Length: 288
Image 1: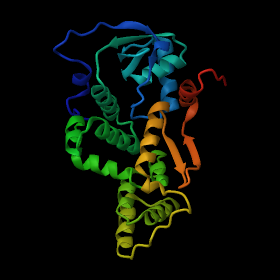
Image 2 (image 1 turned 135 degrees about the vertical axis):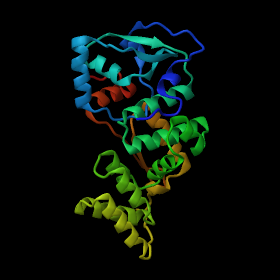
Image 3 (image 1 turned 120 degrees about the horizontal axis):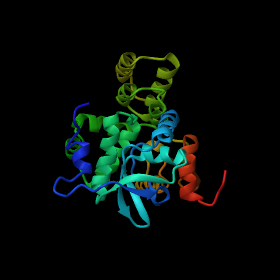
Image 4 (image 1 turned 90 degrees about the horizontal axis):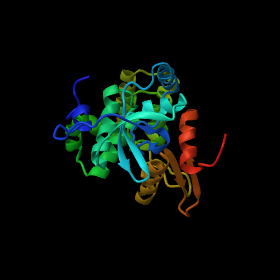
């Protein structure tokens, strides 16, 4: 992959300051970055890295920054997770001064350079950086080294119905499928299109053709479930609350709420590793 933006190395290090020497810190004093774009860590990849660490140790220090009560990961969360799984109690680190903006950029670019973010994770990272750091789409594109059109196309995914977002995140359909479905007018038409794509196993090109054919037909009015605010029309207060909860627990959540403020909160996790993180955040004294 070509260099992204300023490059990961230039973001992690500052040539105007002497490089910090690696040191060893207790793993228990280090916590992950709640703004880490990647929410799902492949269990097979973690097991492979764990096995390597058990045999050779952690060969490359992770980057952390001082925060209240300990240290926060700037880059290297996979190594930190695998080291915990291997039973290590300490890990080599490079401690650096890093503000919120730089930490968010490093976390996003580190994952983009490995190309292992799914499109929804990438879209949420773009959105969070724009909202937190005040970037425009053009500014964000330059910072992370992608086109403005790519930023815009990813952000459009977050305007689509939740089942389509879940289908992309779960590799049921590709980013290309979702882009084609986004051209359909209305949430109902998009969901119907998703059903057709999955049932008939349509290719991206066939999905694009389907969208063109549907665009020629009159759009039907979408109906909301009685009493519940449609996901695509999420109220600003509800969106803000959902984002704060996601940042607090470090995992994606669904917040369903009716007009009379009754509803449910669903926290999504995949595998033992994410469950352990959730327990640490919300029920640290619990045992499995």
